[in-house]
Image (cartoon, rainbow, N blue to C red; front, side, top):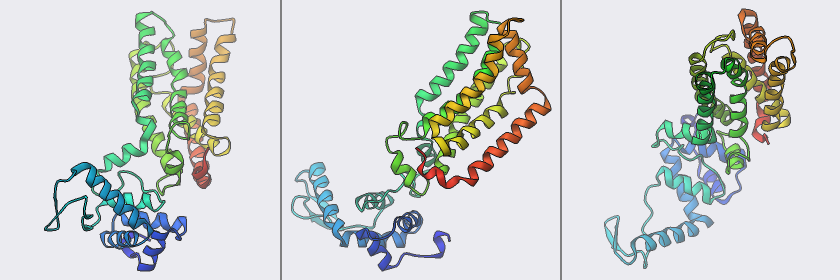
Length: 322
């Protein structure tokens, strides 16, 4: 049911204000308040009339006293001083609804109210996935590969980059979601926009950062018998989805370790243990076998679809992902 087809009753607003409303119904109401001014006003009045109202009044008076000192303030046409009397309540703004939600023990996603641009909400959801440290790390990997190819004259720079590139988004996802990455992870995961939706948002952010940079770096490097610079894109997507599917069982970091470690062992071990050819040439052959051609790419595409189906089937697990 959409927010336009129902409205909060006085009883529902009162139960929300005194904390007796079940969590699932409270989340649904908070989502509805982002779009409905009349219900937001009703809930705001109920909060101010309850036990939280006195706390809100004290906080408002303290803030006004600290900000304005003893200077008089005009509120709704009358002259008042913050030290003597609390200003009369005005119509609640989206920010006021957010603070009212927090005071009553609930959580509303920052940036979610309608007056904030969609870009702010997307950036908040992306969180650690778009922080400068992660983008800088991907840039260092790309520039390091180009430097090896042209500065140090390493002939196998592109095969090495293609071997490492699929693991980069896997690690990025593992480092962008979970208590280890986000100080408000538990609150965010419990919000209506948390869980699998938040995890996929950060996954997309990681892919948008890593895919263009690493593919461009691959195109700048000499071929050296390795597959094309974009040959790793489907494998990278499949491995990322596989790590997310495993995360539902063992956690995000363990899933990334199993997926990334398995890939590196599969492509690097034969090249390092083969005595018949140079490691770079053997690595290029190994990558051609697993990346080149319609059969290999079709297999990676099918793997990505299967992993996506596994994610959808177990989506409820990601509300409690460690």
